[in-house]
Length: 260
Image 1 (spheres, helix red, strand yellow):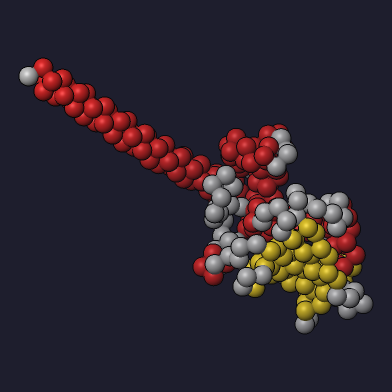
Image 2 (image 1 turned 180 degrees about the horizontal axis):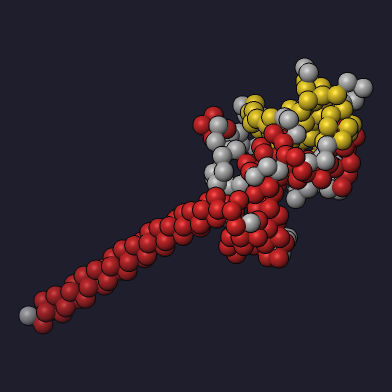
């Protein structure tokens, strides 16, 4: 009788322990699901606020849009710090991005100072300014030039475009992958490419990467490639995303070519 009672108590305690662990596991899983949902809702809320702010920016001024964009600074700062930057640098980048976007969306083209530029030399100078053909965040950098090419550029603004494409390539690659700059004639156009090895973008994403607020990285605003598109168009050009299966992803800018 005592043995049966002892076994019964032992089984009862074991059942309670199992039930307790099960409740704890379910609670942890539920908390994780709730936290993920909260993060998703918070991200969507930030994007709605930014979209509304930029829509109003033409009426209330660039400062308002910049103030709104800096709301993304805390999340952007974490990624910037991971890449060796600072929170202040992240906020400054977002501030510049907002100003660029508002200016381009509200008649920025007439403000551009276009001048004849030899694009192949400009690209070499740009790469040299990044440190030359040396590893960039542990990525290998290559430059391929196919002859002399002239076009009309606003160099600082086009530099913003090139920097945006480089940042995108870094995000899309890992240590050991390659980032390649290509420049040369392409029919009646001047072609500038930033290509990277690594995972190729699926066809459905290639059609959406230039949409405002579209991003596959939650800590990003989803505006970088959209701004690149606006800058290319302000130069009278176009930008497209092309992939070579199992090889690389290319962002190609076509500009009107000058005959010299």
